[in-house]
Length: 211
Image (cartoon, rainbow, N blue to C red; front, side, top):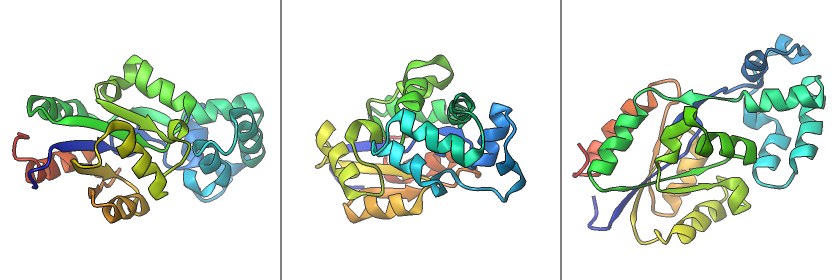
């Protein structure tokens, strides 16, 4: 670990918050009928309008038109599917945040997200761990999305942490590689393999004050 001030920064979906990883899973959570259910699982990010919406290239209404057509449902049902992507914080993540706060380590999140999901994760009780983080920013606020280097640079500039030792956690390899290229201490998290335990182990190695 360097002598720079450490800052622990997290992606949200798949790291702090459990999400539906495929459209079929989100459709089932929303309890709607769709011909997509008969197809092989399709990851969220393989639907280009989803990525465009999170990078602010599409409005919510434009995105829902595209999603409804893709899934074969009404726009109201498409919104239910979209909102159903979020499930719950991973058990144990509060203990990780407790440890960081006790070590007086600044925390934050940099997430590819959108206004409805952001509101749910930062303003509602079920996702309380997210509200505990210090420096919070989403792609919809920054106007660009990971793995674009501009998203990481905009985040560091927004909170004045470019000269800090940024310990970063993400479940996307391209995002981790982008962060590494900027000198962040970036770590790939397996969303199916107990993310809080993975994060805890890495923090113990990277931040001496963390217990």
